[in-house]
Image 1 (tube, rainbow, N blue to C red):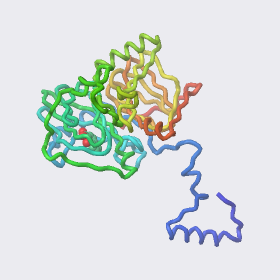
Image 2 (cartoon, rainbow, N blue to C red):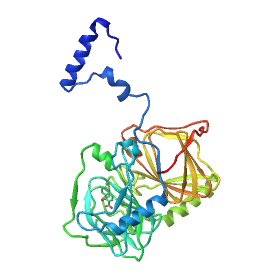
Image 3 (cartoon, helix red, strand yellow):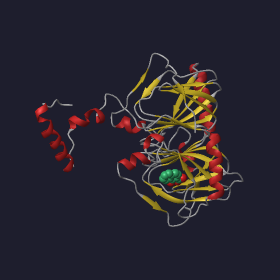
Image 4 (tube, rainbow, N blue to C red):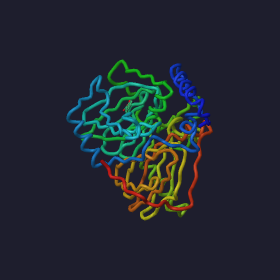
Length: 356
Ligand code: 1HN
């Protein structure tokens, strides 16, 4: 802060009061806070155990019906660093959603873009602008911004999936719009239609498909898993990551969300790494732990954890593991804000996270 001569202190204090009264703030008092040398995220590294999430999602299934108004049976993963905001990080919404057999979640659309990543269950589809996308465990379904979407469970077991949205980011930009579909559900005009047209690596030439999002809406785990096997085999490495991309141009499948799957072989670990922007990690398969800024987070199947911006992270798999990761990376990249680095030395573990 600028030095003030003692004799002027009284004048200076009065001046600061005058500024505040006129809704002004002097940069010299706040510059350290608003312009730190590197990010100081409010987002805390945090973890939600599946053994906690599942019974509460089931209980919600007993207590809350889905009809107009209730809309979606969703439990938001609220980061305790964000003052009660229902957000997982400053930019990302993460939640689990529970849909019982015979239920439908009504059609609507909104400007935040969303993804569904199936954790448990069978017999559900999400209809996205008329295309019914089947959901089985490990599948990714996109609902790009302003696309109509509804969910139907025609099976005989409940389904639980992970919802990832760019909602906090769109909220900070004060650009959230929402609309209910006039009917409960949209008419279905195709089944896995986007996959039949775009899921083969070859793409149709008879249409203008230059949108910001992928025309492919469903990325089945069966294919992803085969590809991860091939990648590990081909490289001889113990860790590999694939990106879910738009098959036309190779860009991220959604413009605001980075979507990845990392497979780590049993006993292997990742190098210490940090990047600008936050990540939500869904442990789809396996067990292990991650060290995030010196704190150890133990995880097993279907646990979900969040990595804040610029936090150093190392993953260690005690079993062969698949980590599904949602990030804000494409936003940072397109704005020229993305940074990443690998660190030379493993972190010292200074504590272990105790889940609530
Ligand atoms: C939403 O529309 C869904 O469509 C899930 O399943 C989670 C969280 C916030 C706002 C809208 C869905 C949501 C959401």
